[in-house]
Length: 199
Image 1 (tube, rainbow, N blue to C red):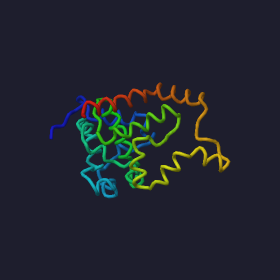
Image 2: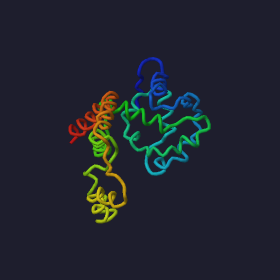
Image 3: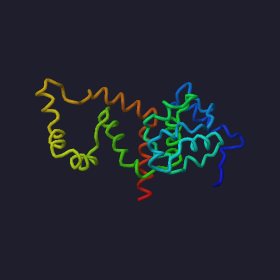
Image 4: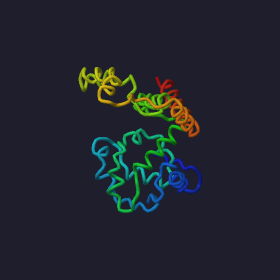
């Protein structure tokens, strides 16, 4: 496999990750001793070709081709690696940044595209919610009562003395502004556009 360097300095990729907003302030990426504890406890590594230790090694070598690997999309974000690491590294956080770098380069795994509808919900409602493209699967897996409850949720909440699950319009606008200022909407569009090209 060919190692692709960002430039002559192998730690540029690692430093880019460490300086990312998603990285913990004291993340021990540069302290990694390649002990393999992350991989030994990783549920994804047990069930796929994903190998957090290998991913970290490639980052430390400046191997930017790791961004194009399918395996970076197999992390569950369970933070088991984070909790077991003796030097406070977090393969999970590194993986999150690598995914964002992949999306920025137009590399998107087809499995995540259906989840972009969660982002649309956030932009529309100002809070998370289950997109309609998941209703069929949830009804199949949980039963008809799930759909029945979902269709009548506001009525059920009123019966229980609770307000409907809707944010004030002003709050929705404020959240939308924040999401747009952080380019959330552009990243969401990039995921959807990449998925359409792949189809």
